[in-house]
Amino acid sequence: MKIRRLVVLALLLAWASGTSAAAPAPRPADHVIVVMLDGCRPDLLRRARTPNLRALAAAGTTYLQAQTVYPSQTRVAFVSLPTGAYPGSHGIVGGNDVMDAEWKTVGMGDDDPIAAQALVARPTVFEAATAAGLTSLYAAMKGYELVGARGATWTINGKKTLDPAAWKVRYEATAEGSADLAAGYKQLLSRQLLDQTLQIVREKRPNFVIVNLGAADYAAHSFGPESIRYLLTLEYLDGLVGDLLKALDDLGIRQRTAVIVSADHGFSDVDPTRLVAPVADVGGHRLEALAARGIEHYLTNTGGSSMGVYVRDKGRVADAVAALRAEPWCEAVYCQDAKAACDRTLESLHAYFPGRSPDLMVDLDDDAALNFPQPGQHGSLRHDDMSIPLILSGAGVAAGKVAGEARLVDVAPTVMRLLGLPSEGLRPDGRVLEDALRP
Ligand SMILES: [Zn+2]
Image 1 (cartoon, rainbow, N blue to C red):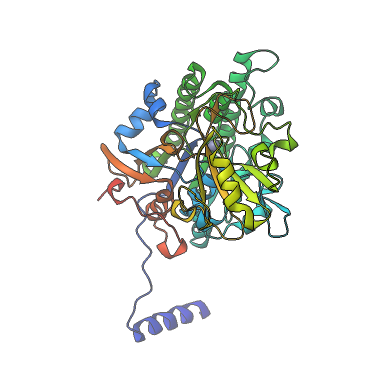
Image 2: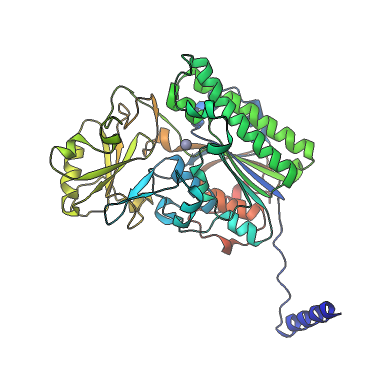
């Protein structure tokens, strides 16, 4: 009785105010699954034999000129993905840690990604989905992707759930002396994470899923992006995408699901013998060119082909810039200091978050690697590092289309539209990819 009275009252109030109760937004898809192929370079993906991805693309919309955010690094991009925001807006600016005003390091989620979620300065799709009564899952290969998982119903932290023996050698070119075993381990980690993801999909049927399959990133760092092992890893990942699609078929939810395939960054093929700051040297946090001039500084690795540099005495930023530009491995320097001769401002790259960004970001030439002697690195503004694949397919998506430019930050607002979530729930820098949506 009471409830009925309340309903009548609510209807009367709605009528009296001249408005009806807000109609729920139409939901083109009941489920959206974003499959991230960590470190997948789109030109190399096109060389691989990938029947599942090709079929997905043919049935959907493909962007041929999709770009990630700068710095082109996993940690940064995996927060841009669910916020639709640039690092200059969400505040996760790159590197394992940042240097605060008291010259103390602040961790960016390697140890506890859930605690680091408080550092993210923009709302996430997960929060918007939860507020609307939808469920979600963020399945992280590396663990620290979960810095962007605030509001997710379920999370998987691969650092804790995946095979420890395989995990230990994920960035190595050999395991027990064998390159084949090392390559197999990288694939195994991705298969395990997909299996763990599918278990939750079967049991809970989340409306929104992000899963990061890391094998291509590990293979590119270890063997180089232009190696045959990288190509074969991409083909293996295509098989996992096929397994995912089959699982959706078996569950009977494929027709109501939109699948998005993308990556967090591309890759540069570099000379691994040319190390700018070897890890043996103060943990790789120090540059000889600056130390020699008495400039106190701290380095953060933002993917290996770029780095952040904090300078303690802000009066010496211009000196630091001049010293770094004279180095043969220096491709470009970006900063906010008007007195320094930088190539571009961090702000123009959407990479400036006051109080947290390094004083300067440096892109290395592609003959150099920052800390680790690996043939594959990323992080710079170069095309190879910034380019990502972007395929949308399935429920709510236009079929058989090939489109041009898109950005990683466009994915979140597009997911919001596909799930019928109110756009006020997000503060994205990106736009809805209207041309990928079914009219
Ligand atoms: Zn990555």
